[in-house]
Image 1 (cartoon, rainbow, N blue to C red):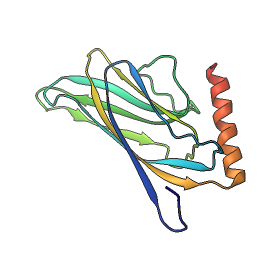
Image 2: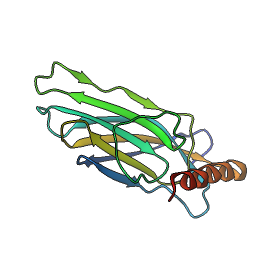
Image 3: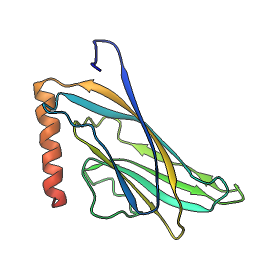
Image 4: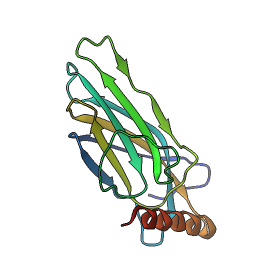
Length: 153
């Protein structure tokens, strides 16, 4: 599928993750000419009557561990969501932060980690597909390479 002038192409991804896991969404291309920007991120517990507290994060690089810490100074972080629900449904929270100006052209990695409680989460992500010119392609690729080296992989 190609991007055409003036037409916004949206790709959607959804999945379910158990506690303390990581998913990878494959986006890379051979020439890196296709970029992506996150439009939305949402999630909900697998079971609607379960106590759950957790953090879902999207990264540009594979993570060696999953945790509930959110650090906006981490250049590999693309977005984060805190999900809180108690079984009485009196407390429900889904604050989401997505760095929507960030364009990337490599795979993204989603992590899910519960705090004190265990549970699975469903996620839904919308990405805008962006055709990159040679300069944008080079910048996006170099940022990704730098993030991989910083992460120690």
